[in-house]
Length: 320
Image (cartoon, rainbow, N blue to C red; front, top):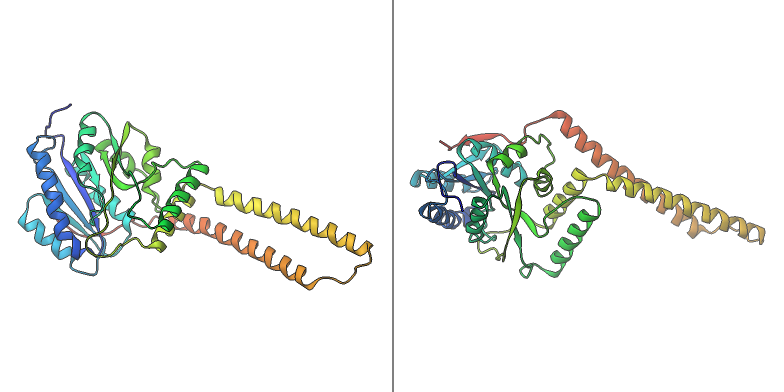
């Protein structure tokens, strides 16, 4: 195992949105982890916690400012408004890259086990550039959430998107991986899919995810579904293939209906069925709307990319 030196400056990036209830405790826990690693001489004394306030409406930024005044190991950046979780991670990595050599991202609610950080750092010192944190079970989730998660990973695998199963945004990345990641200019970020595509030596650390102790989840079902949809449409045109398949299927059904109508006509059954006509109209209309919506989604993403607007705006920066 390598020994510590000034090149092992660890930056723990913590995205936070309306986390005033949990953030104080989270900072204490994470700072203790950081100080332990420094004491063990696994990371540099120049290591820091960098909290990214993603446009919170509560006292999150005030807590960050107060903590930074009390500790040299805590710093933060403040977005001008809410830009979303993925952009908060990218913003934190961008702002802190000059100050660090290895980076860990973890959410402020600390449902991810901070003890896994020790193993992540050990793996980094053993030569791994990326260390993914992955859950070893989903006992804390509802049956519906477990089913949707399993379905999502299977679907992404089917359409050719490489993901680390049960891994979210709790991970360690080396400086050179962060440099490659920051070269990705796209607006529609899905970091769980981008990181595996970069390559470099990687491994996985498994841990048991805890239930949230304080505050409310910032990722309800609506946001989770939106993130899943972003992941699918950002990495694959499989939905477009689905539209093509549905179009072919609809055409096949229309030929079957035409054949059926001809048989009925030859048998003297000339009265047209109102029900079959209505079903056909609704069926075809529904497929057309689905197709237009999926095509529109891709066009919308292209539209956003062409404008090249900033992914985040930093209003205040405490890094020094």
